[in-house]
Length: 258
Image (cartoon, rainbow, N blue to C red; front, side, top):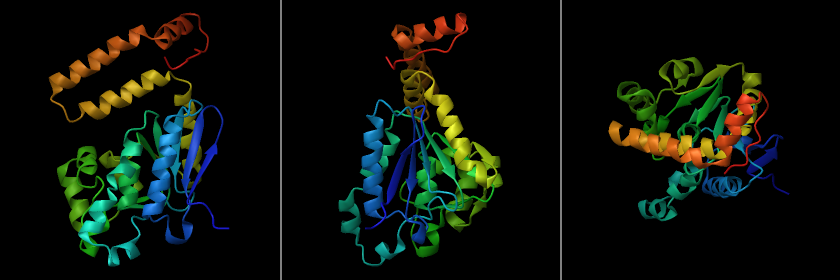
């Protein structure tokens, strides 16, 4: 019986760990894996027991890009008809916080996948890059858009035009990752953060994600108005009143997500 391409484990306290499982090809992102990953993220998004998600490729590698064998015979029409943006949208549209735990290579689609997370924890040996230019292609899932928004035009342009990799420390300096830890601590640290977030109000976390992701491409005044309205809306939730009351009573809050 073949090993599953995606493994999902519950780690308690509302944390689900999603692990890519194609180690023989460095977790190359073929269409089947991406479809299964999208389906899983949709399930987790609707799962009331899941409060936060950790996304990893395991201890050795995150994802070394797309499956190059697939590119040898694929035509423009084939690629268009796949509508692969649907796979990525399932991750982008998740209301749950996503923490990527990156060890080893995060290249091409792997780097783009990591950028879909809200927080990126990188092991010291992690390598990030968009090497598509080296096979006559260009990034197609955010490498010329999310990357530019994360680290700025000139750093990003160097990465996508040269195809060269950067280290975890370089990625940290650029602002591409949230934190760098020892390789053996990467997944543990990501789970630790996920557990911390799982104890917060789900509706407040979802509003932060929505406003931050929508506002980044809006004019400042419009984005501030969006933030202000979301802030005001939260005052009519059970969680906001419970959070304030628990703080004053010096006890843990019991959030319900509404």
